[in-house]
Length: 58
Image 1 (cartoon, rainbow, N blue to C red):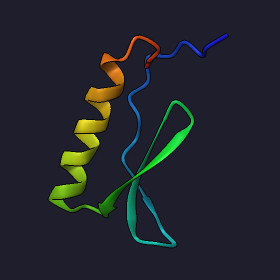
Image 2: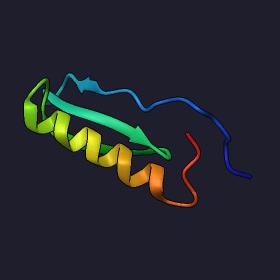
Image 3: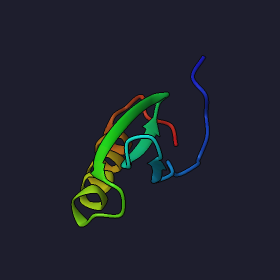
Image 4: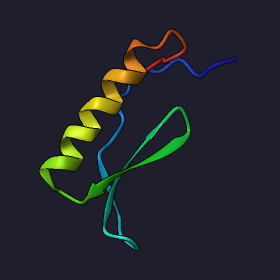
C-alpha cells in the first residue's frame, strides 16, 4: 500500500558531494550545486513532475 502523506519534499544538501538533493517517492534526485539557481529550478521541476503523476502522494 502506498504511503499517503501531504509533506512537501525537502530541498537539502548532500554534504559529501556539495550537491542539492531531494527525495521523492523514496528516490534521490541530485539537482546540481547546493543553493544554486539551477538546482532550485530543477527542484521545482521535479516537484511539479511528481505532483502531476497519478501515483504521487505528497
